[in-house]
Length: 248
Image (cartoon, rainbow, N blue to C red; front, side, top):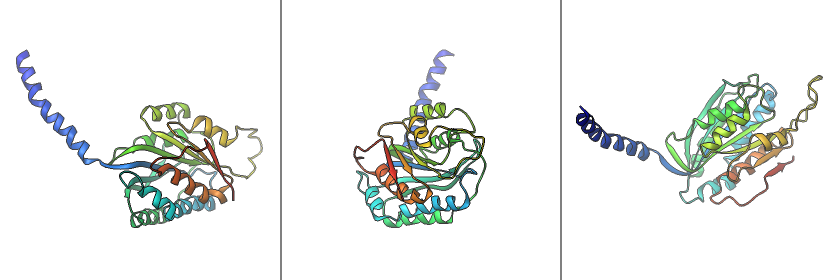
């Protein structure tokens, strides 16, 4: 009986190895796998949400970003886009796309233009991290895996953001942040809260080369997101500040 089990295992091993090899061959190499995660909680009104979508679409039409994404050793990136709010609400609106030309970047921008705009209630950065972590390895294999989390509030739904952050970092994922400083005064009774840029710096970003872009109001969002993605997709990211700011 023992000899029969050994024989069965020996015969099955090559099949298992071939299966692993086939899965590996299915993943197309790219310089970066980039996940764009955008806050659509109730603190983001319809006008501000439109600024976010338009800002991302404009970024992928920018010749400087297109040049950056094509200058890597492989010459392409893979990108996908989802919105997030409550711990259990994430909408994967633009599937993974290979971006290796101006035409491909334009297709991604058009997909953002056509994506539905919906608003939900709470702000679960931890839920966004967990969802983003599960999106990698779907058709592409990047030399770097980056999640770009943009939002205008702290985590108030789902599990502890520190635990979600730790889980993502343990998978080799780099977490970058885009904190939007909303100048609207908080409702009475909420009291003083930790400044959002400080919160993102301490509890959201992490991993090799991670950084935070701060948009001083939604009016600065387009400038902020363009600068941020150019830095994220650069073949050899230049050493930059831990925190950058976009104003006006």
